[in-house]
Image 1 (spheres, rainbow, N blue to C red):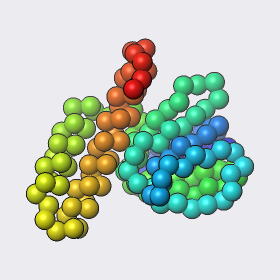
Image 2 (tube, one colour):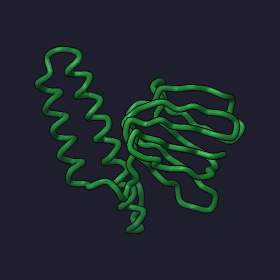
Image 3 (cartoon, rainbow, N blue to C red):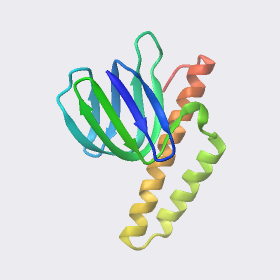
Image 4 (tube, helix red, strand yellow):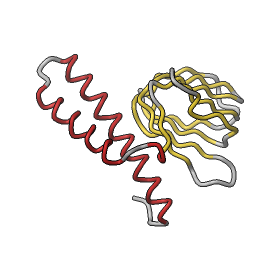
Length: 141
């Protein structure tokens, strides 16, 4: 099936895939070819993409929406970054800033925004670190 991951800035991914594992708002979604049509909100997290004959790829997304058709999946993501695009030190700084913001947030809207930022920074770190492990040949978690 074809997977497209699109942000407001770019087309982050467009290829034929065997499987997509996405962070749905209600839980993890596993999508295979011929999946029943659906629409789902996505939360910030790591999206796993499996392509025939290749190691799984991981893409950090900042939330968004996913439309599934039997032969085509479209992800409209707030942000999407491949592992090699993520600066690990900047991602760690963003996680620290989000954690500090959560500790100071008194009202629910500020807390929710900080939680969203924390989830996004955690996804970026997870994707970046998994890429570095696979590139070095080190075992995964």
